[in-house]
Length: 535
Image (tube, rainbow, N blue to C red; front, side, top):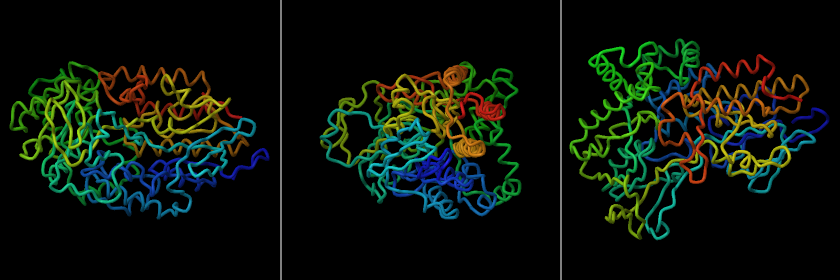
């Protein structure tokens, strides 16, 4: 507990969320001598990997990179089954880490935080749970995740529907039997593209309701090659450091010196074919201008469209599956046999880009004037990204101001970590940080290390309060937006802007330059926490 300046708090830190950010926060802070407690709404650890249990759920970062690096013994002893891990494996890993470091005793499950109020006179937070329990803590750490509040659009007649309905992000803990069922999946983002091939193997018939066709690249998943694992683990520290200083905080095979039209059409096509066979996010860095020049980017889009036409047997259906937007202006997606699935007799694409879903009926969904009778509906309709979970809590900073009110015109946070007016509060991978445009595990570790080191610094200097300065926060928010608009991430409609949720302002949320971001954070610390006030 904290006793600086003769004010006693129950805890040094309260952490909200027991996903990978919350787990590492607890391990790191406790290891540095801070009394810490984690509150988790779920019945277990894992965050997104606890909730997202839908068929086909899998990580799109290779296993040997999507894992903690803070403990050498841990990363040497844990063995992943596949190049890209599925939900069950990742959840097993999260539980292993928690048990290995004896963290479970400091996690309170099945508990939601409903309010957090800052005490200006004594520089601590009073945090209240949905059970009415209140605790005080010097520091308030929000490890609530970027994609943790599910979004289900309002559909006319939904209350009339008598079948089963699930959101992919709140999948039941008990098994869901889809065998032989007539299933509808609404959505065509990353979740749907993972789920559709898996559900098609089980369902009697699958109806894919697609508003926006998607670019997706083969993942080429396979059992993890023991020789590759051995080679990487023999130099794990160096490998991690290389990735840490690479774009997107992961191993990339980027061509950063050559532009798209510096090579012949034949050479460019051969390079795209190589990257198609490689899989993963290789196209985003095919050439130096792939992610910034529309004309250059269109060569990637054309290549992928031709691949779709070559995979899908029905030419008319193939065209319906071809996207018409800029490649990577929506989140790049990886798949396993996604387009091939539409060659199956038990799969029907319902194209709703023009008219949308008309309404739900008692027995199914009406679209394009046709009633589609289904036994169950899977909503793969995304999330209220980055800010949704935070806005659901009553978080009041100086002067009783609500965080939700401060963010009414868009989230504002210096470094994506700390908000002016909300002292001693930290948002891990929050809006204004690289977060969803990186390997999230690396981004989490970087943020948690920054927070823990800051708390150590404050303890050593008898400081009880840190707050972002307004004159640092406002330029940072502008910088994030300006930087985003130098790329094609801002070239279309996507959830990076947050306005996929009705009523939310359109503000580009993630920082697009991981390497530059890390350098900025290091510079801030070197300059005695430039942009922050410490007291």
